[in-house]
Amino acid sequence: MKSGFLEKLLARLDRIDPAEAQQLLSRLIREKGFLEQVFEALHEGVIVLDAEGLVTFINGAAQRFFGLGDEIVGERLTQRIPGLDWETIAKPGKTVSRDLEVFYPDNRYLNFYLSPITSNLGGESFGWVMLVRDQTRSREQAANELESERLNALTLLAAGVAHEIGNPLNSLDIHLQLLERKLRKLPPGDRKPLTEHLDTARREIQRLDTILRQFLEAIRPTSPQRERCELHQVLQDTLKLLEPELASRNIAVELDLADGFPAMELDATQFQQVFYNLLRNAYQAMPSGDGRIKVSTSYNDYECRISIADTGKGIDPEQMGSLFEPYQTTKQSGTGLGLLIVRRVVREHGGEIEIESEPDAGTTILILLPRGPKPVRLLESSDRVIDID
Image 1: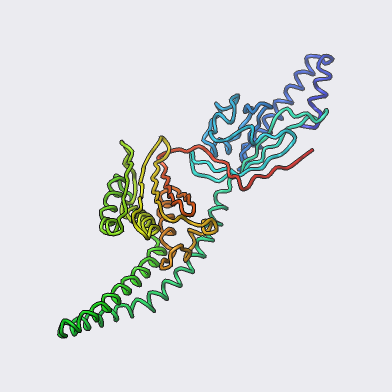
Image 2: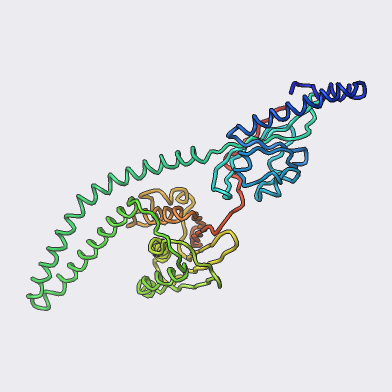
């Protein structure tokens, strides 16, 4: 519609005859229908709102992005999209660009521009237009490229490790068995110190074998074999495996498990590895013993939460940003692959992992696993405000 057409129409409304009014009305209807057809043909979402944030028009793309229907017309946008704060995004006289993550009907990363619709007479704003773009594929491609580069580096390294270390380890183990047979023929007095050296060599071989196995687990492409299972039972089984080590370090484990915790479609074996890595990290953060690990669970209509908190030495702030990177570890003998494996498993199940820590005050690991639709969340790091005045 040409600029100023409505203003001219309103100024002449009391002076036009019915026939001309009918022609003008027909023109408005035709142009409205034409614009709606244009908006429906767009892949981008288009939402038109009045000054109070009530939806006056929404095209099909925006409906698909947010799981909405035509019934939203006349309703407040923020009431139908939980997590979207109108006071935060609607800035008079300014165009705001934000990134948005939605979880229903599909997990998508969106970017929207919210711009005021101003009148030519005085520049007064009487509404808003929101343009929404789907950036899920581009974000996934960027993340996949970065992950692919890391996995390629790990693959090359693990292949070299497997070849250069794996075979010598087998040979060393065989020779240690031969030495043990020879030691049995020695007098007890001569046998004891040599046996201690032999046990030390065996432990070091086992440690190297563990490092090699972790490398291979970190890069092995596996898809979750989902089946309905009780996560509490998986946790109990893992604690039973670690019971001797926990007892030897005098580590107490406190369980605060929610009643009625729902069964979930998960790969039980992978989550046993998740719990094993996290619990082992927790008690290794308390080298002096006499520590405490608290494991708690909770759930709501949207997600299940598993928290593992220790009273260990905590993590320095400068190390927090690199916890999930390969070879980054707070332990002298660690590989830095344990948390990488944990995050990969959790994300393959649609969840996320959060870490809170303070030096000398312990660390808390929080795993969030989705049960169903989630509210949207604004991604704070990409807030951009454009002054159009």
